[in-house]
Amino acid sequence: MHRTIFLIGIAILALVVFILQTYALDLYLYLYLYLYWTFWWFDILMHGLGGALIGALALWFFVFEFRGRLDRLLLLSLGSVLVVGILWEIFEKVIGWQVDRSLADYVLDTAGDLTMDIIGAFAAYLLCSRIWSR
Image (cartoon, rainbow, N blue to C red; front, side, top):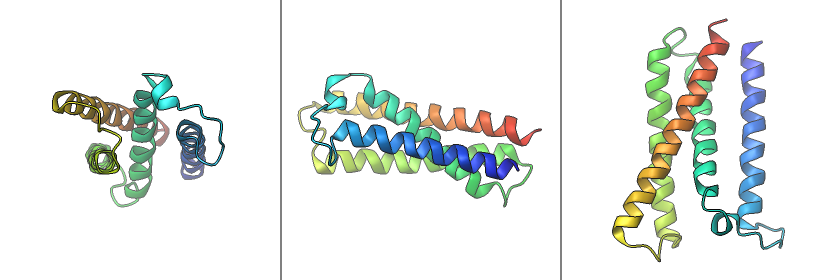
């Protein structure tokens, strides 16, 4: 029962992230909203939601191997989010989303993005630990 509820929650979160990302980048919609450039806080929101999504997926994936060991699950979740977050930041740099920034601004933005990823993963962990402790 808990697995199903948790998986449905992950699917809903993934759908929300997909819809927001589609609108933000104007993928196939031609609405020209440019949400990342219109709202300064949109990147923060998306990194928090993305961190929660990746953290929840990692928790769901590893829960069967480390059943009852929530401390190890937290480390695996946070580690997974850091790996994906760092790869995402490299991707942003490679495709040129970070072109107009100085090195100091880039480092500050990357640190903020990774912090939001970790906060999202920790929120997913707290929610999951409450669900599984029942």
